[in-house]
Every structure is written in C-alpha cells, then in structure tokens.
Image (tube, rainbow, N blue to C red; front, top):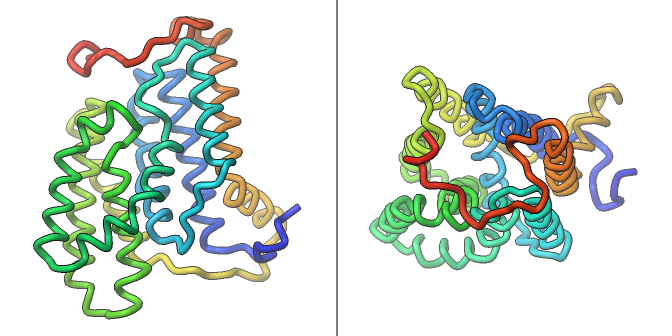
Length: 268
C-alpha cells in the first residue's frame, strides 16, 4: 500500500532510489561476506553520490524518529554480531548532513571564494571524519551538488559556471577517497572514475518526473524500493549480519564487537 501523500505513478525519485538500493545491497554483500572481492565494492560505490545528492536536492530536511531508529538498529546489530561500532552507519551521516546543509550553504554561497574554500575544507576533513561516520564530510560535499542543481540553477541558469567545475571536483574527490579507502587496483580505480563520472552526469540532469503507462510488474517493485529505502537499509543489514554469524563465522562473532577497525596499513 502506497502512502496517500505519494503519487500513484512511478517517479524519477523511485527509479533513482531503486537503482541505489540494488547497488547498495551488492556493496554490502561484498563488504560483509566477500571483502576480498573488490569488484563488488566497486559496483557498490556508484550508489554513494545518489544518496547524498538526493539529500541536497530535497526540499525537506526530515530528521524524524524513524531515521534515528534505523540508525540505532544498525548500530545495535554491530554490537550483537561482533562488528566495529565506528564509523557509525550512513544513516547517522545522513542525519548530520540534513541538519547542517542549509546553514553550510547559507555561509558558503555568499561568494566564489567562500564556496571553494568550504569545499576544500570539507575535502581535507574526509579522512578524519570517516573514522566517526561512514563517508564523513564526503557526504556533505555530494549533498552540496544536489543543492546546487535544485536551488541555484532554477533561479539563475548562469550558475552552470559553478555547477560544472564542482561536478568535476566531486568526481575526482569521490574517486580518490574510495580508491584509497578500498585499495583498488589501477584498472579498478579507472573504472570507478568512469562510473562515478557517469553517475554524476546523470544526477546533473536529474529532474522530478512522473511516468504513466508503466507495467505493474516494473512499477510496483521500483516503487517499493524507492519508497521504503530506510526500512530496506536497516532490515537487510540486520539480516546480513545475523546470517553471517552462521554463514561466515570468520567475519562475525556474537558479541565480540570492537570500537574501531584497524588502520588501513594493517588491513592491506
């Protein structure tokens, strides 16, 4: 049953979120069950710009209790299944981005110097902030792109002179940060760059739209994934981790959690 305040037709939001959900599940299967298979992680990385773009693009800044509950469930699952508590899951990052983005944009949109200074500061903070929250300030960097597309271009098409360089900046920043984090090979890094570039180009031209005459066999699953992303995120991670206690005991251990993972140089 669809909520009454949502359109009955398939929307561009449904499609984008559904694609992001599929990529996210692939990423998590790779992360939790086959961490040595970096190809799954590479595919999963493509959903990262989508999630944060939509935060900046959205008109609302919902930080209601379901989001906090979902974040708490995922954190609790880490305690139970013997995972690392930090960095906190992406729902915590989403909450933080929704809280600060409008204030950040108000301060940095005053002139070009402030805008690019803010972007550079956020870039410098990616690594330290990722120890506390997944993706850290990279999430805010990407949400800014969504904010620019939704707000500035509608008011002044000349903002293309700011949007295009910022898109290139984001492509490079996402690629380098995820390449370094997951230790991709050169070939994988180049494919990641191309994939992130394609995703960002699609997001550059994303607009709200509704699609009629879509067969129910296609519309219903896309709507379900697009309109229940929070529930899907929390539930599928809980199932992956609980099942991992039996299927992959080398990666999970009941109650044997730790605060932080080992540093990168000890993991690779």
